[in-house]
Image (tube, rainbow, N blue to C red; front, side, top):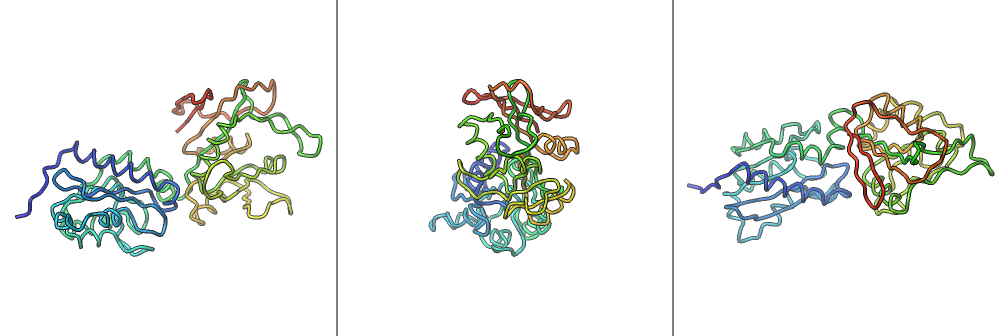
Length: 331
């Protein structure tokens, strides 16, 4: 008779937390695939670990099984596999992980949360159970869903995960009043510090697309690149009608939010960062089309200018101060 581990809720949660730690290592390489971590445990000892490092490459379960030493492979038939997201059951760029698990003889699998991707959606769990595997689902489910909130929002809501971001002066303005961007016109207000510029570029690196309104494009001609953080520049998008010849090469323009979100979804864009201007930000807020928002409070006083967007009354908010700069987050 095979020996089986005696499992407690505390054990399952401890190893799932390790899965989440591993999964975060794929933050920049895994998208548009989800971040996933996997741990194989036998008799309280970790035999193998893995995570999904890069889209198109081996999944977390494959890497975890591959990391098991040759002398420990017989123990797989007495082990538990912990994985933060449901194993896939379809042939994509890589073979189905559910079939690999069945071939190893691992008798128990603990899954953090179900995969909402249309080609999975419970099929991986069902395949394992049909193959005789004891499958537990929902250990640290909220944390596992939060980790892949962009991926999950894209598949469940059929739109990108939307983050709003702006900087505001000490007296509540996000810019000076400006009518045009011609020579001699007022320059945009500089509210960010060297530190917060790094924070902004880090935020850009975690999104697949970045958006400004047509007025911001006309006045500022922003680059919207990752000059202060490693990674791939996001797709650049403008909201509103842009005159012929004004759209920079490589940009996309959409007349309204509905067609914007439909267009980005068709392209597989899972995350969108909205940086301005004020009317553009407010239009997303008023439509209820946002998932999180971040406001950077500057020490600079403008005296007058373009008022900052207004968030809905009662929206959950937190405030933190880093390097002398106060950030307010809504989600």
